[in-house]
Length: 450
Image: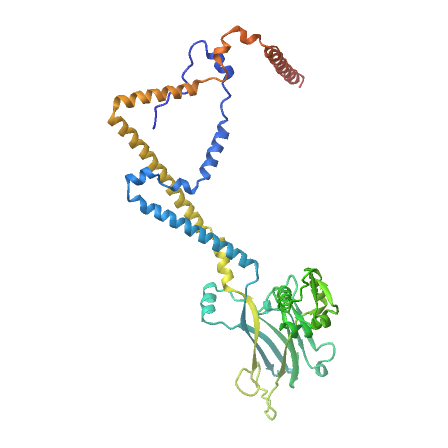
């Protein structure tokens, strides 16, 4: 029930001023009080949004709000559980298989006739390019994002090996290897002089993320895995151990190898902790993708057209010839980007926090209005009784505000100050005064000397 309080600045009764100043605790620091208030304001709980039973009795329609509040708690729990699931899923690599189409094309440049009548040397250009093949679902997503992955980002290295008999031991290899400062590109090109067909081999080493390894042929046949990541290989080996009950029944940290594992690991028994070290020599770098390509010059018997001054790009003799090859690559799952954006999105959280603040303010207003209603209803029912109760309450509040620490009734008598503690109190009092005066004197002397 609200009560009209007295002013905190009201003076105490005469003769009590000194005692009250001596016994009353020091006023609280306003900065600490403000910090405490801000801390309490931040810690708004779900209970602060609940309407009291009295309000629900007065307003039956408020039950719909309570139902929504219960549904909100269930929804918050579900969203929090899903967020935790997404965080755990993002810790693991999320990959999906896609087709990368590689285009290997060669274009010929005929000799050009110079001003002095001499012809330049004919040459050819080999280009290696590629792009991801997209299905309908990924096409819509890629159109929305407008981010195309560069062709070189799929590979760790690329080697083009030309015919050694034609270009010699020093000019028949073209190599590209990824470094920390590599700039991604959409393709690779090689240009060499020549006027005849050239056999070439393109070696592509995929850039696996995370790193993958090729298994020893014996272990690959046993586990049914050719190339995989280290965790997947260890898990497959553990599944084989469990399926064939190779774990020692008494010493659980040991594995009793069967005849296949004994041939592979060259031991009859090994510890769990030894599996990674024993697997290490059985894991090798993955095989590169090998593409054998023939750079075709032109059909035999076709006369050379000396009027050509640029590369011919026609469907026929002397044309640009293109071959296509499809390989499987692993790319990040498109769902991973959506998961990251969901976890990092702060706009919805800010909007929810703003709505929560509005709900808290509204509930506080409702509770204050309920208190005001009860206050005025009590006055309307029995004004005299209400005023008497109000005065008693105000008197109690005034006594609490002006009450002193200690026992004023005992302090009125002289015997109180002849007790043993008084001697020590006097000594402490004078010691404190002497120290205070000494500090003041030292400060004054220090100021004068400077």
